[in-house]
Length: 306
Image (tube, rainbow, N blue to C red):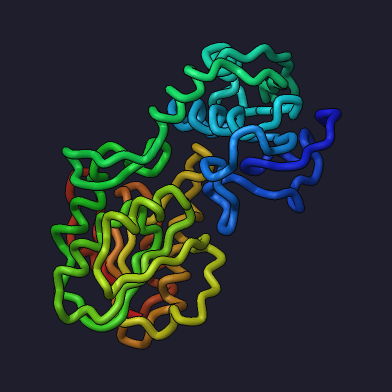
């Protein structure tokens, strides 16, 4: 275990390395209700332990935000699995102008620094990882968000096969709000709730989808407990199948079960999935009827009736 006490946490560092950090103030965008490091006044935050994001741009962005937020004498402890950015931590901190101590334990690289870093390098990393409007996408987006610099081909295929929905619905795992535009093209849609875990994606979606019929809920779809999301007429989704960089087929299966639980009898689910994912059985187990609407480019689109 890392021998230190922490006042704040970013992400979910392994218990065996960091101890119990569950009661500490949280700053990860993947934790509903967490504070945002971007909003912390410079030089005001106490010590922080961070499970670093795997992507290069988002990792340096998070490190730079932490360095800017920390008090001059506050310790930053950052760790990551060796195969998910850990071997690059030292280089990231060097690029940010920090002096640090590096160690390795339980397949993780661990870096500890109390240096304030180089102000220009920190500002540049923050600018590179910040939200921006992408002219090619026509959307607000941010590095680290799912499919942040392109339209996911599965979502694009699903958009081309969406029916003319009506009534009240939800987009589970809504991301930047791409599918919402297709759903809201129907004037018969009364309301659409965008449910998304990633606070960065949700902040972008609020800028991308400004229709008055829309509301936003930051939540883990697997643990969704939103009283207003009951007896819906329809659900759309492009469920994730990676968790922390590793493939996890149970993620999409959980999304399907949640969709079944919030639809009214006769309500419809439209979802897209990679061809190799085993979703047919869970669809059949949780819905009265399931039809494959389309198959193309390695994806399948399903319609299921509750």
